[in-house]
Figure 1 (cartoon, one colour):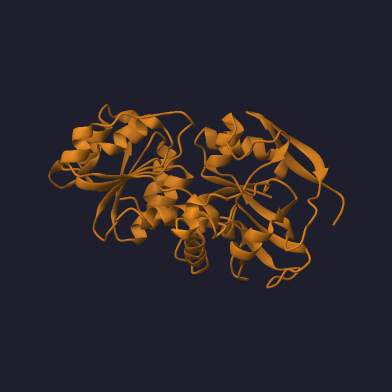
Figure 2 (cartoon, rainbow, N blue to C red):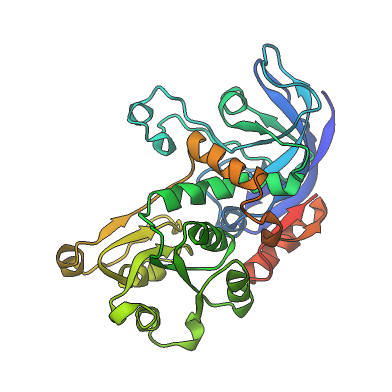
Length: 344
């Protein structure tokens, strides 16, 4: 398909422009999709505010959580037809490199990110079409299917966090990712403490099942407030950081009981660092880990949760907004108003 399309192009921090650009042209094994839904994301907000390692070219289309209809197929595509309703992830592993052979697919050395959701059309590269593209069942709305990518990241994080039924888990940050953590942790049968600076977002956390909420602005001792809710004041079984602020990373490491798992999940700005008490790690036998991105396994798990109705996806989408109001939607996210906006 040749011609022009409307797209939001990223030129630099806080410089995003709605412009006319070329519709992507297909190569063998690729697909062109007419986008029906593109969700705003914390990573997109970071891109808008300060740039992002995956957004390196001036005038790039960005956004990566989307769903739509296939309108054109390249040569040699099998398993998909024009008219299929699909959602595709923003990457796929190569299955050949050192880390893929260790089955650490999120660490793939040849991973290439596919951005471009804030536009009328997006191209799905060959490897993503073959590995990480899913057909949407008729009963699933486009905007709910578009939640698959961030949910897959959180399914990955939850699976690696040693959360067991009856555990007490603190989730620091009740933004879109933190709220997905709340929902999935409750599915595990655990009790949840959610912390944030926004009463509105803490209200969302309670809606999703959080047992306790703490507004970090209203306490001078966030760690003490969390521990006070645990048995004997010992601390939580699992502590999760979902804000991407180094200071919150440090606080999160202090909230666990002896033997706790600490998952530092939120991505911080490049070049930042934290300080951790070495004695605390050693004598309390803490497990401190980072978990990044998704894998095909977790993509399919997330899609099953959505298509099976086990996650109420409607709770994560605040409202619909047209493509020309993308910057407004990102600014609202930055003001902690709403959760995700559906760009149509």
